[in-house]
Image (cartoon, rainbow, N blue to C red):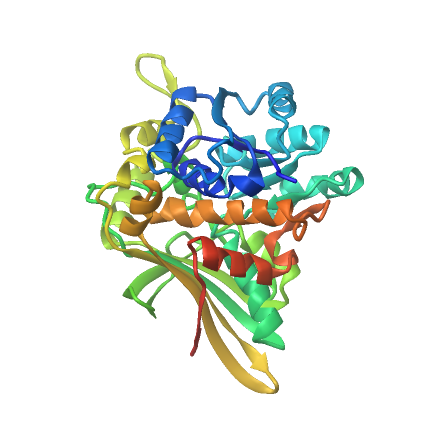
Length: 405
């Protein structure tokens, strides 16, 4: 039986999800894209039609206007569209509102990042316990499937942890999740996804899991150079990130860290913006008496991440360096994916950052549709069987490679 899908959000990741759902609409059924700005939804539909992505030409692909913070409106839309699966790709500020609507209607819930409140950054860990995990019992009682944080990171990297534990290790000492974008978008300065959410990750302290406890460090205070497959040597910085806040509980490892690649130019621009207060999430009042949030002003001045896709060159490499023991011997493996910006644009008119974040939730929706991941409770990705997920990703655009070190 087909499972209808409601996509909430109309950014770069939503475009990828729409294309991929359309490519599998013989399983996922009718697709509705909803956002505050319906014109953006219509632009995505036009892209899907232009690329001929609809597998079942008789399937419906349409748009609706929605303020997802309005829980009754979201509930009504789920019911009116007869949506079985809701893929939440809006800003992280709407997660709890959409989850509430799914709990009320019984629709399966998927998101790609932890919930955030606009006036709070880098809260006390574990972040999931501050919001999503408070509804573990509610999902269990109502039999609602809720899969949290299933983009690439968080998401696929969580599955890589479970895959490594299942197939390559008896015990794990350390996991270093490493994300680099060796591409070039040609702009002076831009972020590859929502600038507001992007900067909020790095303007507070870094929470990392070391010696089985939470440790706080200043942002960008630790770095190293790592020689990645395909993209070569890249400088990566220790940062805090969503996936650590569930992996620490579900994967038995002494250290779990997240590293992200940044160019010197990015670091210089970031530091200037941060040091003069332009990355603050707290409102300020101008000399004219107008209240503004500096971070939102910066967001408005930067390029729309979706606009970076045409002409984007180069590749991304994201993976997990896992160290531990197998059969009494030390072992070290790197489980990873490489994604090409130009190839992504050719297929779905997106860049690779959006592509790597957008393909995994569609894979999750397909696994919910066929029952293998329809677990009727709230889970983080590493709690699920990674094998069907990684196999499915291989076939729909994100192949996994394993390098024995």
